[in-house]
Image 1 (cartoon, rainbow, N blue to C red):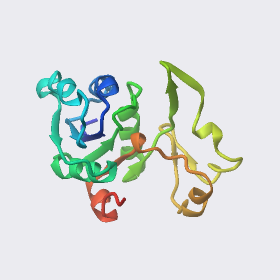
Image 2 (image 1 turned 180 degrees about the vertical axis):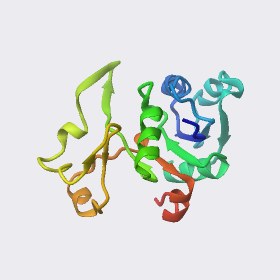
Image 3 (image 1 turned 180 degrees about the horizontal axis):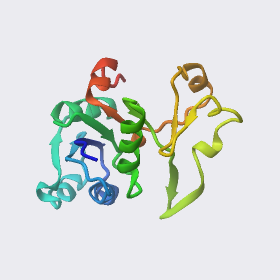
Image 4 (image 1 turned 120 degrees about the vertical axis):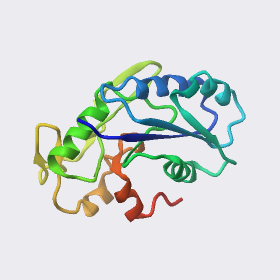
Amino acid sequence: MSVLISVIVPSYNRASYIGETIESILNQSLPPAEVVIVDNGSTDETESVLRGFGDKVRWHRIENSGPCVARNVGVGLSTSPSIAFCDSDDLWVRDKLEKQVALHQRSGVECSFTNFRIVSDGAWKEQTKFDAAPPGFFDNMKRTPEGLVSSESYYDALLRFQPMFQSTLLMTRSFFDRIGGYRG
């Protein structure tokens, strides 16, 4: 499973969280080719935490411009044909990238998202985001060993329930370029 992935992490004043976030990214069973942190004008100790990772991560500081700008800057600085996003206060389970890449390779999708749980005070909540979906939300999707795949538009359904979260996205660079990046 040879896929080069750049992980983009926008950050603003997350010194107390970003170290654990980076560790969860670096400890993936399918490690990313690079981790690009965009410090969005932090005024806390974020820079000190990032320096502690040495050459394991690349980071770039910008004037505070919001997470959409930071994500776009991160993609511009990245070099891999696939891009994943992780917010600076989120954690990934160890096989997140591996499972998503398998889904991409088997189904040919260019963009995917995963389920997620909220972590509060060090404890993972029992209910997942997908558990909260309205009845029948995923019925028109094809089930594969790696996950659910849709060949039709879910636009209308997504207006009623939003199962996606930034930190679960994996996409090809060409898909990102085609949609024009983040707006906001």
